[in-house]
Length: 129
Ligand SMILES: [Zn+2]
Ligand SMILES: [Zn+2]
Ligand SMILES: [Zn+2]
Image (cartoon, helix red, strand yellow):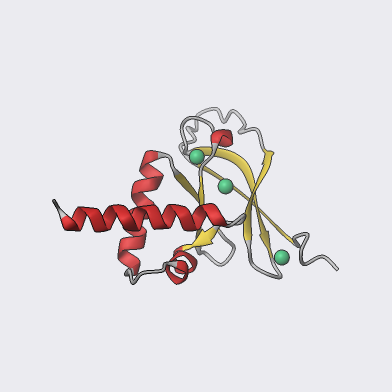
Protein backbone atom coordinates (compact mmCIF):
# COMPACT_ATOMS: atom_id res chain seq x y z
CA UNK A 1 0.00 0.00 0.00
CA UNK A 2 1.51 3.29 -1.07
CA UNK A 3 0.49 5.76 1.60
CA UNK A 4 1.79 8.75 -0.35
CA UNK A 5 -0.47 7.88 -3.25
CA UNK A 6 -3.41 7.41 -0.91
CA UNK A 7 -2.86 10.85 0.55
CA UNK A 8 -2.65 12.40 -2.90
CA UNK A 9 -5.88 10.74 -3.96
CA UNK A 10 -7.54 12.04 -0.83
CA UNK A 11 -6.34 15.58 -1.53
CA UNK A 12 -7.55 15.36 -5.13
CA UNK A 13 -10.94 14.22 -3.91
CA UNK A 14 -11.11 17.11 -1.47
CA UNK A 15 -10.24 19.70 -4.13
CA UNK A 16 -13.02 18.35 -6.34
CA UNK A 17 -15.49 18.36 -3.48
CA UNK A 18 -14.64 21.94 -2.60
CA UNK A 19 -15.04 23.09 -6.20
CA UNK A 20 -18.36 21.29 -6.47
CA UNK A 21 -19.84 23.02 -3.42
CA UNK A 22 -19.56 26.55 -4.78
CA UNK A 23 -21.48 28.14 -7.63
CA UNK A 24 -18.66 30.51 -8.49
CA UNK A 25 -15.05 29.78 -9.40
CA UNK A 26 -12.25 29.67 -6.83
CA UNK A 27 -8.65 30.82 -6.80
CA UNK A 28 -5.91 28.50 -5.51
CA UNK A 29 -5.92 30.58 -2.29
CA UNK A 30 -9.69 30.09 -1.88
CA UNK A 31 -9.28 26.33 -2.32
CA UNK A 32 -6.37 26.27 0.09
CA UNK A 33 -8.42 28.13 2.72
CA UNK A 34 -11.31 25.69 2.28
CA UNK A 35 -9.17 22.55 2.63
CA UNK A 36 -9.98 20.69 5.85
CA UNK A 37 -6.44 19.29 6.03
CA UNK A 38 -3.10 21.03 5.81
CA UNK A 39 -1.84 21.15 2.23
CA UNK A 40 0.76 23.41 0.69
CA UNK A 41 -0.03 25.64 -2.24
CA UNK A 42 2.33 23.81 -4.62
CA UNK A 43 0.30 20.65 -4.09
CA UNK A 44 -2.93 22.52 -4.85
CA UNK A 45 -1.44 23.83 -8.12
CA UNK A 46 -0.23 20.35 -9.02
CA UNK A 47 -3.65 18.83 -8.41
CA UNK A 48 -5.34 21.59 -10.43
CA UNK A 49 -2.88 21.15 -13.32
CA UNK A 50 -3.65 17.45 -13.42
CA UNK A 51 -7.40 18.12 -13.43
CA UNK A 52 -6.98 20.66 -16.24
CA UNK A 53 -5.04 18.08 -18.30
CA UNK A 54 -7.76 15.51 -17.74
CA UNK A 55 -10.49 18.01 -18.66
CA UNK A 56 -12.07 17.96 -15.21
CA UNK A 57 -11.29 21.59 -14.44
CA UNK A 58 -10.88 24.77 -16.47
CA UNK A 59 -9.72 28.22 -15.51
CA UNK A 60 -10.05 31.87 -16.34
CA UNK A 61 -7.76 34.76 -15.51
CA UNK A 62 -9.47 37.55 -13.60
CA UNK A 63 -8.92 41.29 -13.86
CA UNK A 64 -6.43 41.15 -10.99
CA UNK A 65 -4.33 38.59 -12.85
CA UNK A 66 -5.41 35.81 -10.50
CA UNK A 67 -6.39 32.45 -11.93
CA UNK A 68 -9.85 31.17 -11.07
CA UNK A 69 -10.74 27.49 -11.35
CA UNK A 70 -14.05 25.73 -11.90
CA UNK A 71 -15.17 22.17 -12.49
CA UNK A 72 -15.92 21.31 -16.09
CA UNK A 73 -19.37 20.04 -16.97
CA UNK A 74 -21.16 18.59 -19.97
CA UNK A 75 -21.57 22.03 -21.50
CA UNK A 76 -17.81 22.39 -21.72
CA UNK A 77 -17.28 21.01 -25.20
CA UNK A 78 -14.89 18.19 -25.96
CA UNK A 79 -11.46 19.80 -26.20
CA UNK A 80 -11.69 21.43 -22.76
CA UNK A 81 -9.35 24.16 -23.98
CA UNK A 82 -11.81 26.03 -26.12
CA UNK A 83 -14.29 26.95 -23.46
CA UNK A 84 -16.73 29.40 -24.98
CA UNK A 85 -18.95 30.16 -22.02
CA UNK A 86 -18.79 33.56 -20.40
CA UNK A 87 -17.15 34.20 -17.05
CA UNK A 88 -18.56 37.07 -15.09
CA UNK A 89 -16.36 38.92 -12.64
CA UNK A 90 -18.20 41.11 -10.15
CA UNK A 91 -16.24 44.25 -9.31
CA UNK A 92 -17.99 44.50 -5.93
CA UNK A 93 -17.59 41.01 -4.42
CA UNK A 94 -14.87 39.92 -6.89
CA UNK A 95 -16.54 36.57 -7.44
CA UNK A 96 -15.96 35.05 -10.86
CA UNK A 97 -18.85 32.89 -12.06
CA UNK A 98 -19.21 30.52 -15.03
CA UNK A 99 -22.33 31.48 -16.96
CA UNK A 100 -24.19 29.17 -19.34
CA UNK A 101 -24.15 31.88 -22.01
CA UNK A 102 -21.68 31.17 -24.78
CA UNK A 103 -19.84 33.17 -27.43
CA UNK A 104 -19.18 31.66 -30.82
CA UNK A 105 -15.45 31.47 -31.45
CA UNK A 106 -14.94 33.24 -34.79
CA UNK A 107 -12.99 31.80 -37.66
CA UNK A 108 -9.62 33.60 -37.65
CA UNK A 109 -7.93 33.09 -41.00
CA UNK A 110 -4.21 32.49 -40.54
CA UNK A 111 -4.53 32.20 -36.77
CA UNK A 112 -5.08 28.97 -34.88
CA UNK A 113 -6.88 29.32 -31.58
CA UNK A 114 -5.73 26.83 -28.97
CA UNK A 115 -7.31 28.16 -25.84
CA UNK A 116 -10.07 30.66 -25.15
CA UNK A 117 -11.21 32.59 -22.09
CA UNK A 118 -14.14 34.96 -22.01
CA UNK A 119 -14.42 37.40 -19.14
CA UNK A 120 -17.11 40.00 -18.58
CA UNK A 121 -16.69 42.46 -15.73
CA UNK A 122 -19.64 44.09 -13.98
CA UNK A 123 -21.98 43.85 -11.00
CA UNK A 124 -23.49 40.51 -10.06
CA UNK A 125 -27.10 39.90 -8.99
CA UNK A 126 -26.19 39.66 -5.31
CA UNK A 127 -24.41 43.04 -5.33
CA UNK A 128 -26.99 44.89 -7.40
CA UNK A 129 -28.90 47.37 -5.28
ZN1 LIG B 1 -14.06 21.88 -19.74
ZN1 LIG C 1 -21.01 40.62 -6.58
ZN1 LIG D 1 -16.10 28.46 -16.63
